[in-house]
Length: 255
Image (tube, rainbow, N blue to C red):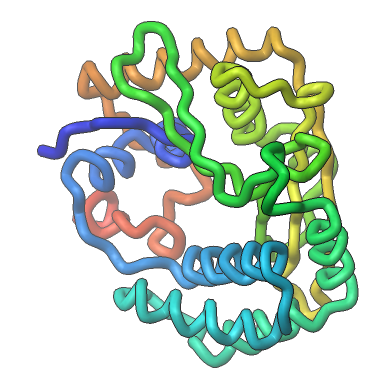
């Protein structure tokens, strides 16, 4: 059984989605194949961050990051996807006018010598009653001090989807706890679509400092469940299917 040394936004979200799947992944460390969407998203992050920090040709940067990510994640469950097909999708995104425009605007709002700016900034949140830290990485903080993250999606987000994303509140709480003041408690989601005609859009959301109390309660309840060994399966979630859950065979598929 693995020891839990820290939590993260993704691990908390995973526990809330399905406790049993969380146990398979974080406690029993069951090895599974990596989903192509995760590989694609990681490669896109590397491409975007390199372009913002260094400039260059987006098509070349995509080719390099896509090849490197496939080497790093050798156990990939391609399914109906293929390295060539997703590689072409990435090229379409890299050449999209709206994508280039958004990344160019971020380049203009990022300076490596500005102490307010950061790429892949590590943050840590301490929650009363939870003995381990909650760790995360903020994709970008621009010159105005507003943090943000990059998202690749099969369709463009709605305003309500951006407003409901818990991840932004966690990052803002962690920055606040470390003494960093974010203007208006604002956070930006930069969403890039993997569609036939790729699109890019920035969503800015604003939180209230008082929301930290709700965040802490949710993290505390999550930890109490983990510490008590409560790992309830959730057959009602959209992910509970042989197509989306990598642990289906261990759980419902064994019936």
